[in-house]
Image (cartoon, rainbow, N blue to C red):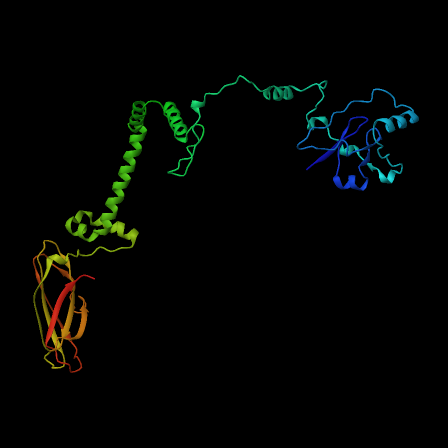
Length: 340
């Protein structure tokens, strides 16, 4: 709450503090005309109330005797202002409130154009009527627990916005024609063609890296290009690996001539039309009870094959000597081929 008072002599409005008024019992001295007056009589709230009406004194004060007599006859005595300046609170010019911060109440005060418009807008028209059919019911819906709302519905606002946006963009067939024209423009065609070539080149490069061995064997003319690419990517070109084209023709496991181990012999056959890499052999040894005794993966180096390549339609006889199994009897074995 912001309190203020108006001087009874010059009409100046000052901002005051409630604690200061309590100390001086309401008596203050005007900082403009130096007159002492009771601030409580003209006290008002700046935020809610308008300043009290003020009229300048029209006649000089009557003689002291007549004033005292009239006071006794017409109204009860009021306390006189204290003579000691220590008991009167001095209002400074800094506490003065300019008239533009409140609405004047005097009819003879000139109004600014903005104030005149505000006063005109506050006039009530008794014959004003509103079309109540345009307003929503506003009653709550008992089943849904929600009110029907007042004013224009949100769906109507959204529909209006959508219509405005559609009108701004134009009819649908015009938008479709513009879109087709944009995609058929020369610049767009050049960009799409370049992007397609880039994607196709990336796909071909990835396939060449993945199937470089097969491509080099099936199309020998591409081998120099693949070799150049492998120099950049730090890879190697070898014989292709197609395990479906390699078959185990026969295999035997017999005691070694020295009697301290076993000799394994495997015959592999290449049934394809390309030279293939030599596969690895997975050997498993079992005892009479079917328990696994030993298992080992044998590569081309174990069979001392050089080069490790199977020619198209040819056979390769592989042999290797196996060490003793610590006296455990071997009664069965299995042989499988694979590429690591």
